[in-house]
Amino acid sequence: MHQRLVTIVSYCSRERAYLDAVVRNARQFSDLVVLCVGTRLYTGEREDLDVPAALVSEEDEGRGLGAVSVALYEVHESALSTPIVLHNAAREAGVDAARGWMRHDPFWALLLDGDEVPDGPRVRAWWDGAAGCAVREAGSRTAHKMANYWAFLSPRLVARPTEDSVLLAHSDLLVRNALRHPRERDGVYIWHLTSQVGAGDLRVERDVRGDDGQPLFWHFSWVRDWDGCGGAGDGGRAALKAKVRNWGHRDDRDWAELIDRAFDALDVDAGAVPERDFVHGHELVLLPAVPSVLAKTKSG
Image 1 (cartoon, helix red, strand yellow):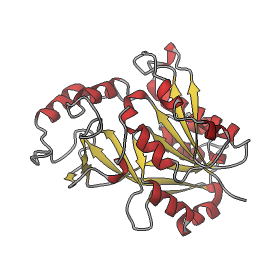
Image 2 (cartoon, rainbow, N blue to C red):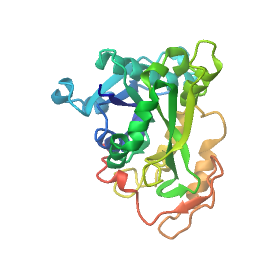
Image 3 (cartoon, rainbow, N blue to C red):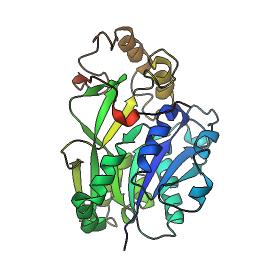
């Protein structure tokens, strides 16, 4: 029986610059791409629902390979003070939508944030090859954290250490209590390993990479503008400030001040870049060009 792969994307309009790249790449390997969109931003502003809805075509309604669906979830006033809950609500809405689309047949789910861009052809080769076959044969008792590059301020400026934010898990693991864990995606497997009713024998594979040993995903969490993306022309300074106002970790630090300091000293073309980022303290490396996964990206 064909084991289908669904990519579930937590999207908001603050990540609109990446929407085309995420969907275009995800469609190359996914049976279904679900865009999870809340009715409001975390500041309480109404969300722009027209942009993700425009990606759903009549062909998608026919449930073809690489179809795109939108899962809308209500953002109530009472939840705005606990944005982590909304992070989880997005994924829960996406999983529910995927179950309905798949008519409750089991599937594999790749949980992405709206600024995590897959390298579509390489993910497709990995999933269709021996590594993907091994994942499917391992079954629902294994969760996979997929390695990703992490970029800071510019898509050309990446951390030397890679991360593994992206989660690949079988739908059997995506029960409500696991999806509502405060550790978000990591909470899915943490809940199973610590709950008396979870999959206590679950195995977690970390830092899963492509056949060439390199990450299959790029995380642009701290990049909101670059040459050719049609941004505001300020390098993404204002957009990053808007991001942190709509972020689950917005109260952790004075992010706006840190952003201003970093951009005041930044000149990527001249090679004037920070040695480390102010989020994690990672050592940074300047790439010669913008990553190819962003090619043909539209800013909307």
